[in-house]
Image 1 (cartoon, rainbow, N blue to C red):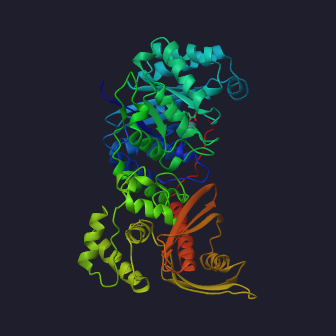
Image 2: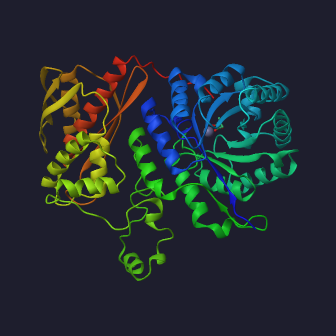
Image 3: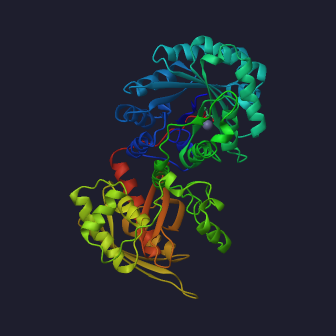
Length: 522
Ligand code: KIV
Ligand code: ZN
């Protein structure tokens, strides 16, 4: 019996971007989409084009510039939405329209204020309308898992007749448990007329922490597409994490082989998982919890003596996957103050960076400064230098030239800063609840900008007392959020740099006349 493929439908840029606080610029979305193509996802849901001009533009640019995967655009079951989605995905070689309407009693009565007959008619019209633009049409009965089974069967049979090629079964509110989700998929597979011509898809939210388990149980019961997001981003508690889904299928072929199939596989290049996860975390500002499965910093770390002893005797005693499979370097290369330019450039190449001469110059200079303070510079440090400092495309409207902070037990934390804005130099001093708060107040005074600080986090890029600190902040103003990052061996300096970076992004975006995002209720 031959192996069957499970289609990986990535919705990081659509459902993932609906995570509260995750907002990506068009350039950032394009960068993620390009990496998703390298990762080997089959479909990228690039956005919800009708919801705002920025969503439309982002979907269109991804459709124009990213080759390999099918590009999908989301649309409610209405002509306007479907036309917008069709225009946005038009430039793609392979394109899909994904249309949806809610089918659960609670959504139909309170949200849509429509009868089931009306909903069924709208679904059929939507699929027929989408068929005028593309062959590949996906239909989702939103909140399927709280819908009446008889109505689900009826509406799915009707949209198949209308031309739908993929039927997605969302657990929109993350309500069901794996056994129940498996039974829903199995029943639909056996009872919906014509369903054997279509691909059944899973789309599971994580409110009860079941998203990955539900998706894999769906696959065990006949689904052959999984909708998921990198790092499990998504509405509320998120969506099924792509990396967990893929590694589940990869690591347990025995579980998925059955009487009807010789096993399952995906087209994902697993060695790109770690890099993709880091990129999404960096651009969304969502820090990955250390104990996150597959991509957390501790996912392949062993500390307890008995575990380390076991691993050294036989790796499989405590490791079910090899770190190399997800793209982590097996052995760590360490650079230091004696590493020359040539060695540094070589390492950058091995890490997959293609740098211009100017970028190499900047990166090597920063590397040398850091290597002077830190004895050992690890791959993660080099990646942080390049990603957070060298590849920053935002205009440096404000530059932090000087920062002095005084704090301690029984003293009032104070900070003074010198900032450069074009040719003007601004100096300010302030006190605060702590050293970071004082520095941020001084920066606000010096720049005259006072966005709301929504989120602040700091983490060590590598372990050890001389580790680089990487600060991430999210600020908001006029309904838009901006992420800033900064690195330094000094965590107060890293924090100040992150804040200035976010302010620079905000000021540049305003200069370009970016409009606030209008979120359309699903
Ligand atoms: O969770 C959900 O139901 C969705 C649909 C739009 C597929 O995201
Ligand atoms: Zn969703």
